Image (cartoon, rainbow, N blue to C red; front, side):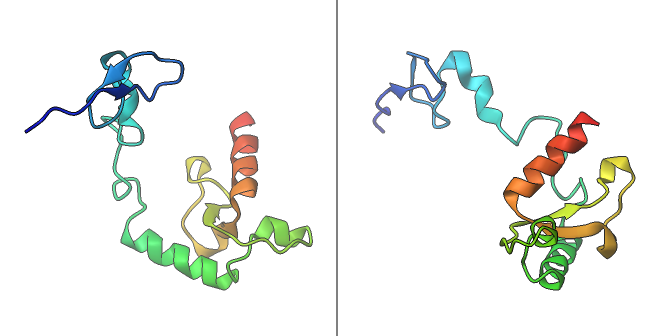
Length: 117
């Protein structure tokens, strides 16, 4: 089987080349791990398995697939995620009254606010 042709490393500003399928040279190969970092629990182990998907879908239907923070401000924005009003890390639960449909910009802003506290 023929070898792959070397291609540029995916790391920004790197002049190295690679034939590896992940696209990083040997110096930057550690960047290829992404979300699958060793030691990180799976989605199922973190509580986001089949039951979570059912709860998520129910919350989206309940909220008409609209971002609830935007709706409170008079805007109608499609929701793409379900958020814990009180984060699980701060004692929040997966109860329906602690879940809200949310758009990506609102979710990022809420997460940033929570990180500052």
